[in-house]
Image 1 (cartoon, rainbow, N blue to C red):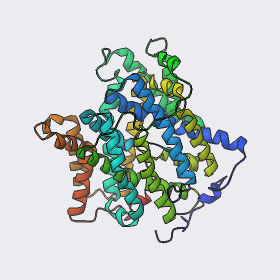
Image 2 (image 1 turned 180 degrees about the vertical axis):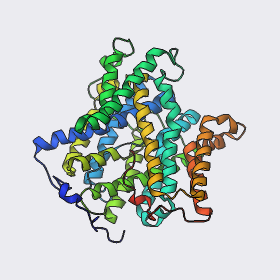
Image 3 (image 1 turned 90 degrees about the horizontal axis):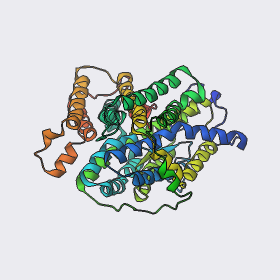
Image 4 (image 1 turned 30 degrees about the vertical axis):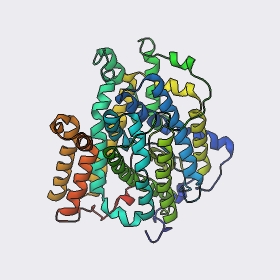
Length: 456
């Protein structure tokens, strides 16, 4: 990375309609900003919904968490685009709730409660800040073999959650009935159909379109309750630490490992963003992007939201449209902030019927797994050594998730740590890659910095 501004050598820059510092006319920039909002909106709200439902939050608390997720995503996007001092890459990067944290935060929430989630998110955030300062020295510890396994585990450990919601939600009296499964199946089929058979905005927003369809179908089925929307206000001022804060060592360790993983994701997204305009990211851009991830995730914890990271689908959207303008992404951030200040919007989102959320989650979480699989398949030599690392890491990671009783005799803190499939599988992959003979590098000796196609 010494040649920070070295071109990729391709003709990518020739395909760009607006470069990073270009400013399209507002009549173009505003709809382009809304397009970015549509591409990331469902992921940003679905992940807090999944966490809230899995740890048993009530409707009002769930709506508030969703509202804060939108607000923090908007502020984090604006900081990433325009920066505050060294914090921010000054690149067109959309931020939102990180999928990497879903399973770990569910584990923490079920063990210690919501306050412990925010405590862990706040205290562990400096891990990513440190990685930002020293990323050149640290990235060699996370080759595609390790990061690919971890991303696959993110998707695999979330499968039970997606299926639970598709069946009606954990503990629901109607769990598994035909009505729930049919509605989830409709959302799933619509998302796949729009994604595969249409182009442009209809393809990019396929999951969002499917969810809207699910809302409409849920009305005659009596599965949509919008009573909370009428009671919610139009404008609300966010208050820090509304749910309080608690600190538990095991919870902090789990969150710290998740920050390491999401840092690698952000490195890939930053490289992907600058790659669309035909150059490599500078050290200043990489450092600023990681600092923004860390500081804004800490800010998220203070303001009752979950950690934020870059959204890869929006990196892909930049390449697809040829519009890399910071102004466009900044407008997306402003829209997110506005939506985050309107409780009625959060209530509409929080009213999403469980089967609708489940049908969308099957697609979203499944794609996370497939992206990890692609990293391994494209970047790793599948020799005996590496296949052993993959096998052991995945089996142990999934195993502790689906059979938590196997460690039920251990102390409580140990159960929380070893009950996180992401932590167990990720650490096993990291350690085995370091100690087994061979370097475990990709086919071309590539590192995660060069893996630009990642999940948000």
